[in-house]
Length: 492
Image 1 (spheres, rainbow, N blue to C red):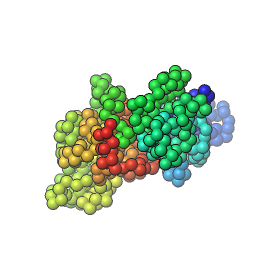
Image 2 (cartoon, rainbow, N blue to C red):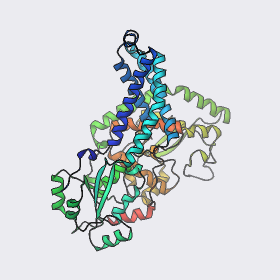
Image 3 (cartoon, helix red, strand yellow):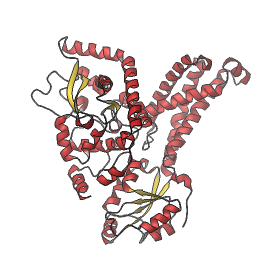
Image 4 (cartoon, helix red, strand yellow):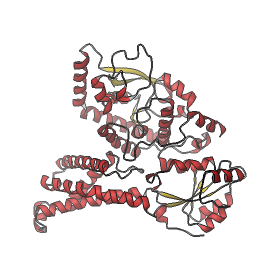
């Protein structure tokens, strides 16, 4: 059996290369700016600036934080130069401002504004070009996990969801092994290629890093012995659910079954995680209240100017929280008064909703209407990060239509969340089903680091005014029929 290098088995290898390259480019830009400022006289740099390494490291760190906050380290981003340039400029500006604040806290590391401005300018010129080159290189690079799929039926066809170059940046499908006549017929009809008679034949002929189990029917077709042998030799063996979760950053409901989720580990029920998350929520909600108080004031004034002194500023609405407990969610009122007095409960449809006021369109676009929910966080009804809470009327409908929907109520709902970063306003059962995939992914992978990552990236939604990233809306799933998912779920 041939073995390829283990380097290709590093799942996030492209992202790590991007991050390290970005940090190196930004730090080098700082060094170059300092040298240009003092005409490449190292003695002058040492005399008037001091050691460059800690200053360059600080600048590089804050720029990387800015890059995270505008979605520059998402796994499936695509190299569109115009969008990339805009995001890099915003990230560098954020890093520039954060670095200045950092220097005020640690004056011994103070750097002249001229050097910082020069470093920011150089980084703005170089970073987009290096990132564009690297992303295009990763799209054709042979340094990927070589994946063999055990199965070639309907379950294996879900890998077809990953059909763009940016989707396949971390792996390469090298073959399929059908199990039984039905899968052979399906594979030939669907043009799966290359096909192998047996798993033994495939592993003997191919250099592989990973085997993905994607069988339509496992009884009598699961080659446990050879899979154990491959695992013993260092080949990763992965279930199709885990593989799609890893690559899509969501959980594919069409191949998931309840038993899989039962045996999967999650930190959300850990007492330590609950305590840390509550501290995280209290700290950030207090910080947001202090930081955004001028914005609160501006919104209040805007609502009063448009609707008068007697019109309500806040809007209270019943939502379903943790363990199905209802609570009053607080928002700045962005619709006309008594918007549902005639039509009743309706799906929200973003700023294009005909019930939205003029000031409401602005605050909805940048998600400012959600800010009063920090009070819900302080009261313990919500978290900073979590699935968005829905209204009881919709929860009843969605629980009946969408498998596993009730499971999202095992954690506190959040002001922002993984689904909000990846999907726009939901306006149907199909949208709720798509968002559930991201909510289940968040619940399964919940930890404080993930919360920080989501909170930072929420700035991307605020700045760009929509739930999208450089990878584009993560909705390119050809199997978007809720009833079909229900049938598949019930079969399993």
